Length: 327
Image (cartoon, rainbow, N blue to C red; front, side, top):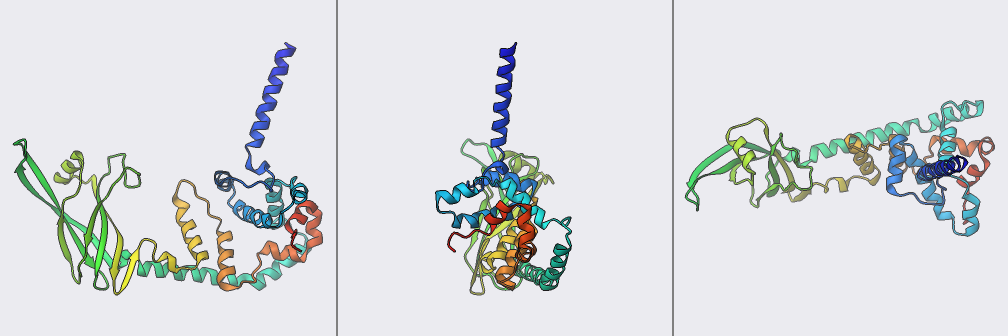
């Protein structure tokens, strides 16, 4: 019996160690995390992205085995808890409260400026998007019956598509379109989906109607002929040239400052299966790039003005955050 108990103890201990090692927060900050580990932690606490960016910056100052040995005991969890503690609203020492109030007076207008910048670029994207320049619509079908090579009666289906300039003459356009069977498990987002393509390489200054021959499976074709409402038309303009300018899915985004790009792209991912969006982190990057390059986050401002206080919380982590081997 003792032998069995010993084996169970060893087994359970091994499982505990394995589980501990699998927790990214238990790893030392001198060891980089894999992207899936970062995402795993950030799903539960979005502010971890900011913590990891701090660690990435500190790697620039860790060059020797002595450096690694010095900071090895600091785990991501320990560092993250420290940063969460010094930024906590519950940390209400008189000094910290006073410094928070000073920071608000200094930098509150910066957040307003960042919000204005974001709204401005979003309006720009909306006003200059390809959807604002052209409308592509489905106008119905035409059917032509003929006898195929097997001497059977077959039906040729033509889809009538309309392209309408909304603001100015279009010089050329490429459109991906599809008829989607909403009852089908295969949707356009799937890698197996191949859309139909329309290319018009001539000037369009008014509504341009054309007939196309979509690639359809038998069931979708039958439903389309029957005017079944379960079949939906979908069209995406992938390339557009007008007024001497070329537009594509990414062309407008490239005109936007990098920090705003990052904010909008992260915000757009909120509805995906892996939402990781720390608004504060992205807003501060916008402020640093476009409003005030000397901007300090609230935690950095307080830390700078209350070093002795924060050193008492965790001296090793405090020293790590202030370490610069190049000095």
